[in-house]
Length: 140
Image (cartoon, rainbow, N blue to C red):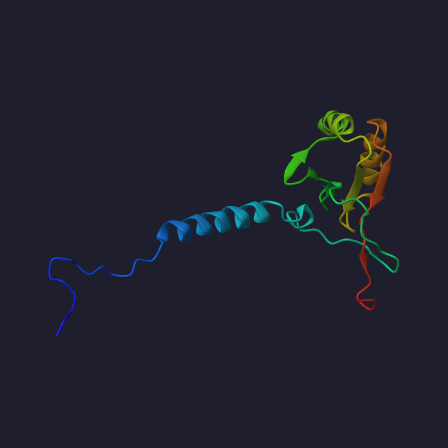
C-alpha cells in the first residue's frame, strides 16, 4: 500500500557538481602556481664546491646567477653574456635595490668569471653578493 500519489514523481538525490568543479579548478590553479615557483637553483645542473660552513641565503627571493663548467652564465634558465648581464643587473638593481645576489659557480668553472660576475653586480648597485656552496657530504 503506497500513500504517495501517482501524479507526483519521485526525485533522485542529486550531487552538487558545480561546487566540486569550482573546488577542482581552485586546486588546479593552486598547484600550477606553486609549481611555477620551484627553486631556480635546480633548473641548471651544476656541482657546487663543498665547504664546512655553508649556509642558506637570508633573502627569500635572491637573484641567482649560475656559472656552468663551460663558462656559460645564466639567470634562471636564460643565458647571458657579460655585456647583457650588466644591463640586466642594472634593471634589477633599480627594481630591487636591496636584493641578495647569489653566484652559483660549478666547482670546475673559472674563478675569474665568478669574480667578473660579482663585479658586474656590484657596479650595477647591488651590494649584498654571496657565493653558493654545499655542505661536505660527511657533514650531512
